[in-house]
Amino acid sequence: MNIELQARLRVEDATESVRYQVRADTPLQEVLDMMVREGVRAVPVVGEGLEVLGIITSGDALAQVLKEGPPERSVGRDAPADLTARAIMTRTVLCVSEDQRLSDAARMMVSRNVEQLPVVRDGELIGIITRDGILKALHRGDAVRRPEGERE
Image (cartoon, one colour):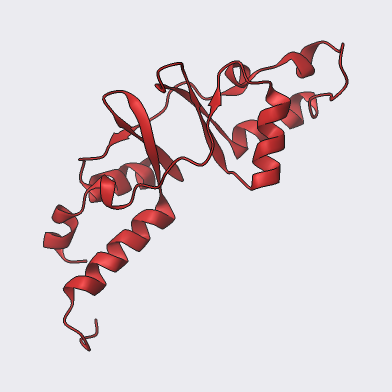
């Protein structure tokens, strides 16, 4: 990959809009239903000002289901049915800003083995970047830069 290209691309070049987000007090059953129904691998947990409080990954959700079983759908039960997003979210979330170099964000994702990162501006969630999105941005950027007909 061309070094000039890597230096030119920013996180904003691969940022996708956030399809789903939840509040910390969202019932866990709702979160799991949405993740399964919509095929969401991770969902940011946000506060009133859209600040990132945590994230729930499919790994977090699976660990909870293996530990406690699926949350009960019936009303009046204790324990798992009363759990909220706050109870299982990962609280330490690595975030990136839209003006960071895309190659730096990609390195962070690889070194920390994460599939996606929230993108924030002034502490507010504005989007998400994924490994796939970064790969596409790098590929698109390389294709645009390379003269037509030239191959690697």
